[in-house]
Image (cartoon, rainbow, N blue to C red):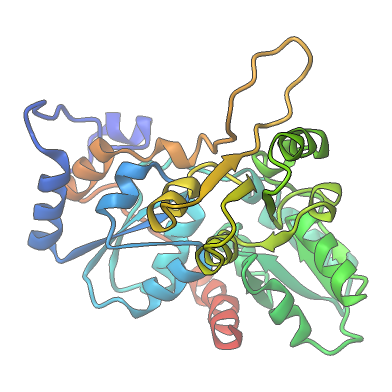
Length: 330
């Protein structure tokens, strides 16, 4: 039975014996319940270490579509858990904390996109995966930062396209392909904070470092990056270039855990967020939504089987189509 206090908080808040080895107990529960743990690169290292699979949005979507497990614990943000449920509706998908939202998803409401579509008849809608199921239901095809250019290039050159909600990613695709997609004015609150000045300061201190930037960064940041792409693209580049000893990384700091784990002989330097004058800055840029995931919440989620993702069947029927189209093109 789901307690009202859980609903109010958005997660199971039950006391846990402090003497428990949480990592061991979580793996035990996974075995008992035929569950797997999927974790995004932006979660904390402890979660990545116990996960059955760690990846970016595209890899996680593929895994969700392929798994035979009865239960999936999606350690990321809410739209990722929704994507898992859309691809495997017969399975139980747990989201350890329903408060784990996304600034990009929040920037594009389904009712606003519906109105915009009506104002632009004849346009196809391509949505970034960082959107709600309701928005995906209004979408012709979904993309991730890892496959966006490839998917867009699958459309005829003269296709009229509305792209959203990430303006920076859409702008990058337009510049690369010569298209003139209409762009939704949304952005990631993490990647918007990286600045050219912050990167150049680090570059001065580390002149031989390779600058890597996520495609959600602003155009001036991407312009000075040596490697531009998804988290998986950046990780793969580092793994394939062991001769390169230093990297300046402009994305959420959680990826550094996997970079350091798989590339122990290399150094990864996070770009700090741009801060206003007089305020206290930090050495790295983190997504507070991703960091809402914790071992305690995962344990309780598995133990009590909540929060479980539910999607309106009418929305789910339409929302899964653009995801499946993306996977077929990737």
